[in-house]
Length: 272
Image (cartoon, rainbow, N blue to C red; front, side, top):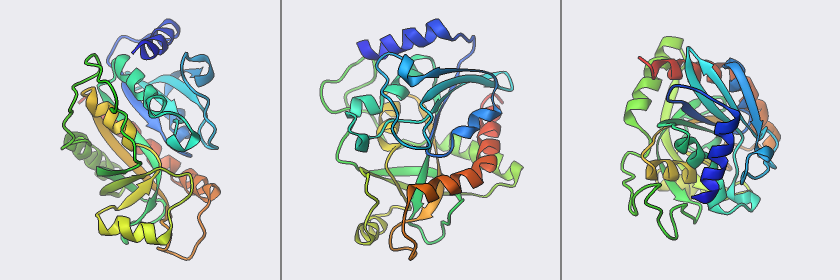
């Protein structure tokens, strides 16, 4: 809690706003969303107390404050992953900081592999639920009542209300949105074809190496979460293509305009 509040105090001393901000976590290759913000101010993660340095290509490593239609947005361009060697408490530090800064609604995005046969690269998918295959939970250990209850409910980890808003915005923009279950995988190696067959059997439509710890921490603190995956590749064994992070970034770059328009419209809709 001390580390969280040190980060919060630093940000509050550098930035100011008067409304309830919307938080956004931007995944691999999706950081260009901040181009849609007006009156932007950025803070490097390296300057924020207790924030780690991002090591993954496609993660800028900065907090950007801006606005959309007079709505303050706090966007994290890049995240920390368990596979980088960070403890799970560091992985979820940014989202806990966003919540302490007043964000009651948070949009969590990621690049993901498509398992569902109906999902294809460049699809945007609303996350309806997740399965935690990471082997860790950010709530393990002593519980801090200042953050949330010992046993938080996870039956609606991804807000149905925000998903309905996203669908309405997608229809308005003529952007097709699919929906599915996200499997959180530790990484950093991509999954084997046998592992993908297992994930498909247990009900996963998407797989990625983030989001799950952040969503658990957000639910613990009572925030509403909207999860959006950009399908950047077919999961292992679905096609004959080899998987690479460069391809992930390329597909994310192709979808950035649709993605940016969608998230912008959703944030506008939160005020209606």
